[in-house]
Length: 488
Ligand SMILES: Nc1nc2c(c(=O)[nH]1)N[C@H]1C(S)=C(S)[C@@H](COP(=O)(O)O)O[C@H]1N2
Ligand SMILES: [Mo]
Image 1 (cartoon, rainbow, N blue to C red):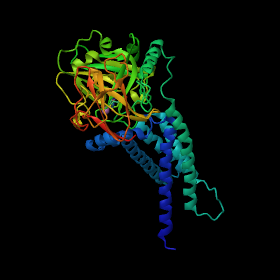
Image 2 (image 1 turned 120 degrees about the vertical axis):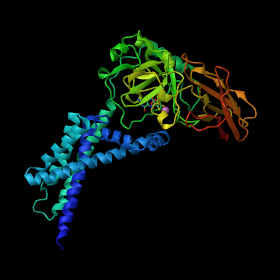
Image 3 (image 1 turned 135 degrees about the vertical axis):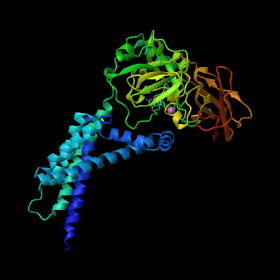
């Protein structure tokens, strides 16, 4: 046996133990807090997003969507575990030199790193515990007197420790994630009546959502969404105003509540994409909240958020702006901007800032987060009729259907062609919901005598036909008519 072999093997074993302890540190933190900003991987993930070139971030959010987030987050998890592994390895050297127990030094080192990352004691203590358990297990002589080599034994025991910590934390952390915001009281009568109205107005068409979306799409720049407690939340009015002001959650919820159906659509989605949804939002007109604050006559406003997102638009749009704290009668979900988000009628989804924290009045135009990256999400939104379902009816006919949306112009008409656009028939429309920025459903059935090229187009409330000119989403949203080859 050559002299350096055992050394190399034990070095590799120590490395493996350190990596396993790093994984356990991350797992411990997750067990304590779940996937929130206090989770040790959250700030690292923010760092990954900030240091990744803009072009890649934009591309990944707009095209990979959730997958892009998951990949970015996976990278953050690996980097975080790696950082804790380094702390554990350095700690082992220091412990040996000082004659201190390795597990204690590893635990303390991990607590320190986790505190530096998150500032959250419970998350840090749990990270230290996870790492400490693995290092301690690796050091115990379970197979004393048997012929298992020391290095293999250490790694095996560390694996057992990491798997145990990982298993416990998967269960605990998931419970944390599911906990969500506190349950609201019973849905108010007004909300219940409006939701019932929306249900009764929804067309009975298989395969498309009703007028209130069951699953509302989510698009944002975060892989870990901000977690802002209502009691800690404030909204400031800053910039070109007479007097800067601060509002808290009670200021918002203390005003007479209104309920509004508002549809959102992401500017970055495909022409027939699924990032368009409708909900009943409860909140207050922003102007009611601002009260007697005097705003300048001119220019613009920048909305800022707890995730450092920011979007700018003309000041005039504040007139009809709404701040919402409930969605379909429940407290606003974290994913959709709890405790308070903005809803700006007629503009693309990106202007509807979630986790709203600041309204900055500007005297000169500035670019928003997506505008710096080449998009233009200020309205008006494009008119669109989507084709999302094809059903074979019992009588042999074929039914097609979907939703149509034209922002504050409203949808007056949807036409369907089953011959590739040569002739058109009026589709059946759902009765309009109350609200000035709401979608409608459409449905059309036809005798199916072979293959058909089905094309659909909407006319907005001002009499404008949806443009047939085709363009991709960037910069101002997709245009064209949705068409689909349908076999009976
Ligand atoms: N704070 C914040 N608000 C945000 C975003 C974001 O990344 N951060 N994304 C915007 C975009 S691009 C869209 S399309 C809508 C989507 O709202 P939803 O996730 O509630 O559907 O939120 C907007 N508001
Ligand atoms: Mo968006």
